[in-house]
Length: 499
Image (cartoon, rainbow, N blue to C red; front, side, top):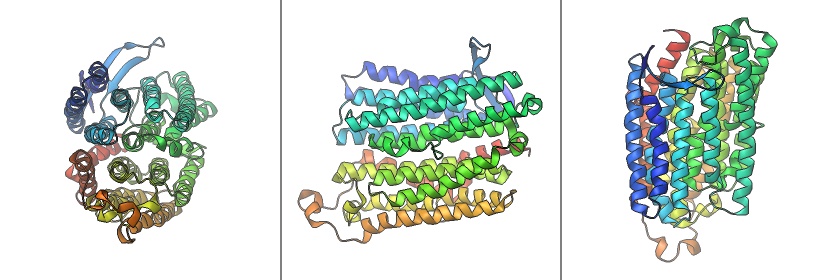
């Protein structure tokens, strides 16, 4: 790719940051606050769309702002991998902004100005992660993301919310310290932390033991937000946050920044050859495999819908990690595309959970008996993306999981492909009872008596976003190349492995 100087990568980070300030200024005028959020999200989508177009055209827009004290520049660049993550975050910020208005107003939530401001800062940090040009810039954005999302996790202000927020912060900052340690070691070994397709040349001749420590610190540090076991404990507890925050954590920013960081380390810091020779490669694959399966069994024990979805995310993220560690071009393509398909499927599932709560105050699966008769469209959208998360054809999850399985079968340990099928089967075991309860069980008469028993869907602000993301999830399964996401994933594979 040809590097070109441009302010657009920095602008993609600046737009949501400036929106956060504007939201705070307009705190006494809710309509203005929400309009600012929506306009900023539209502007962000235009910018990241142009960055994706440049990446697909073989250009890498780059912005550099001098150097840190170490002499390493604060740099943002939109290569294919960065543009892929930024595009997903850009699309879903706009959708989540619309949904958040309906959700927060529907529940008359407190602290809405703080919520929208922190949400915007979180997107700015996620853009910093996506478009970071080197490990140090990535580390700074990664830590700012933790700071920005903490008040969202603890938004309710209850003792449970504050406790969950502190737990999240401990895990996330601990992972950040590991990332910083790995970054320092890489700089000492290679003399550079700039992302390079195929890995930094200096690491090939570095002390193998120190290089292994650096790889372990980076993979472990990013693995915290990727919720790889045993670092997954913060994620289910963080579900105490409002549903738009849960959607942000799972689909747009936090957990995706973890798997994105692992992708950067494997493909652009150490490179495929070094990772293939690493003694930590198969232990990391073992942790990912165990997480894929065990998280599904943990989901079977949950009766609160958002916690089921949280354990599902824990499992699905390790699909991506395992694909990256298998390191065949097909498996990596599947892993990168799964980052996209999971984002659209999982945000739809959380939107549905939030809509059910706003309309019926239902949080637990046993309380959802017959709820499809009250919310048929919402229940249908949930059923579709649940099928996609299991791996049923015609939804995006099938395509990405197909490439993951094919790539693993072509790898050095073909037996690992069975982990994808076993994990999918376990997901069927916990998603089917939810759908069955909602669609086929008799309504809870006492619960649905009175005015709310009538057939009525949610407000357009809630229903529109979940229908949009559900349609995109299906589109990604029927015509994967209809959006730029698949092409960007292919461009990353070509950049790292060669055409």
